[in-house]
Length: 132
Image 1 (tube, helix red, strand yellow):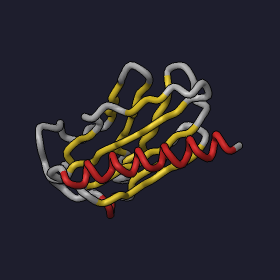
Image 2: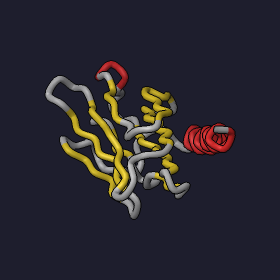
Image 3: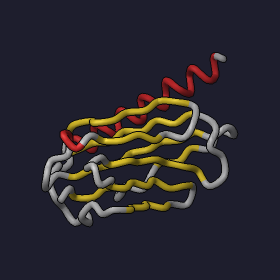
């Protein structure tokens, strides 16, 4: 149990540092693609996906290609503001309210995963899109 608590504490600290790094980066439109109806950012260990619903909500989720257990930490940001955050032991997923989506700002997904074998992975740094 102590090892799990230490791992979780370290994971939250690493995720917090990553979020702080994202905050100091520009929060407006960059070379990112416009947010589309169905978006997938696939990496070596897994993927982050998002889709815009007709209602205006953005539904998102993440998955591992091999092991979805373990600890997940996920942040969803619009510009510099966190609009969704998950710290849990199953695949993260959620939605972003259209009220939180600001035209021209980046919608960014940061997902960190430590699987049941202790293997760590981080979502692609370009898991983002420009809100139309």
